[in-house]
Length: 454
Image (cartoon, rainbow, N blue to C red; front, side):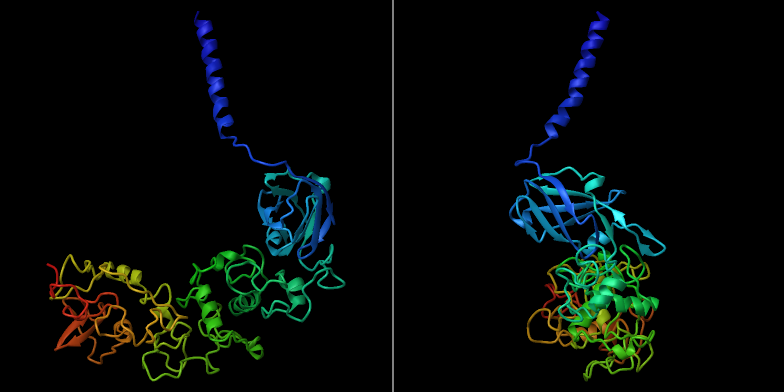
């Protein structure tokens, strides 16, 4: 009897193990595609590959070709043309990231293929898996950098206008001469290459290599719509993407006579390879009468990129950058510092003032390439984010300078310089561009009652 029970339980357990797999195997619609031929079987990045087979989609965007390396890494490519039996695609730079690297050079690498066309095809066996080589190696159609190549973007010296010649992109950098932004990180190939030269003296981009601006590494930029990134290679407080945006906003200048220069003589108007981008060529401080406070580092006449003002609104780039005081979240962290320990404005008052984090209404964050973030036709320096009648220049620059000229005095038991403040009636009052109750808790936008919360 015990043997019968045991046998039954074993059968039930086995059935339970099978059920989840059957339940999760959701059927897909359509016939399974099949790859029957690949031409050529050896091809460079940038070359044209033809895949023949069965049951592909006639709408090219409904097909995806998947390249797979032996270590499991993959790249996804949309064909340029498609029929039910043929797909035609250019091998993009994203596939170059799958190539093996030895001696700092990309090596010929056999990659398996798979097609997604409603359903997945099987991965190709070795006989149908092409060997892919680095850009410009001359293998396959279009792989020779334009030497009789098919569909190579070479109608002029720099087809994609990214400041790199077609030949350099194919033979030197491995970037795509047809795309201004090969790695699709919102920063053009040429800008990343020249920034890398500023940082490393030499720029030889390889996929996923760090730490320098890399035209083949999308992680140092950002997706579409991003205004800053996570990387700041030259340590000036501006992220790579912010410096690129500043460069574009100020005219995308490139001074080729400065290409051999280092440190303070970048060929770029803004570079994330040096804190001083062309400091001696008249691109430093904008010719504005306000404010007289651009010198944040005590080196007048030579301005780092963070001291400059790309959008000429009267506020230095660092103030309007993602990590600067022109962003509401910056002040939340500022008041949480252990040396300050100032509570949010509603919780506690300090000498009759409530300068801490204010959250009663939203404020517009500033941006280093937008001189008028709220669209009121008033430059952001002259504007007043919290509408307390103290403009942004006064409230932001007090972090760095004695804008009101009253000296660096102590404030409510805090050491001089710990809390940005201005003098009102002989008393130091804290400032905060995102709190309408400081420096005036009776301002026109400070909520009633016009006194600090106790």
